[in-house]
Amino acid sequence: GSISGGKWVVNNMDYEQMVEFVKDYFESHDALGTQLTYRYPFRRRFDHCLRCSIWTHRIAVTEGADPEIIRISALFYDIGKSVDFATEGHGQVGAKICSDYFSSISYDQNRSAKLVQIIRNHDEYAVESNASLEAKVVSDADLLDETGAITVLWDAMACAGEDAPSYEKAFDRITGACERIKDKLPDRIHTQTARQILRGRLSFLDIFPKNLEDELGRNETQG
Image (tube, rainbow, N blue to C red; front, side, top):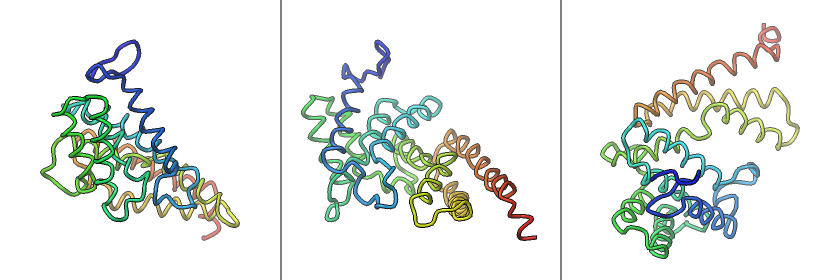
């Protein structure tokens, strides 16, 4: 991939055209993305995919992964969740959508095959050690998204949408989310670059609840 006129170009294709295709596909099928419940009306699956695409590009720079493969596969990898995937699974559904799309734009067949494979099997990569480097980078970007400051934002917004929201409820929810992330996420990260990013975010998730606890006066109340 390369930068041309301020835009990222892949194999003479404008990356922004791919972004628009994915965005339009989600919006014309299911803007929230299947299985995002009514509790999170502010979440958009397309936004998640776009952020993951950005993160993969950052990780690929230092890890030596193919930036074109990882950025496009991250953009498309959850597109299957825009439709009912109860029978096949969203990886299989997404792979079919992407295969048809790449054929329609005459995208390089060898690269298309790699992209479709990552999209089809991406749910397995969080635990699969022999996956390709590009697949591991996509998995890491997926795990990093909504981890850090955005974790706090997400849970605070979710709490605000529930019955009788309060600072105390938000504190409990945020603290629980931080603990789950610290317990489970580090063992699922593949690349050194992603581990470094995660360490910084875990540091934030360790400090924030302590500061919030102090500012809410919980120490004095419980003492």
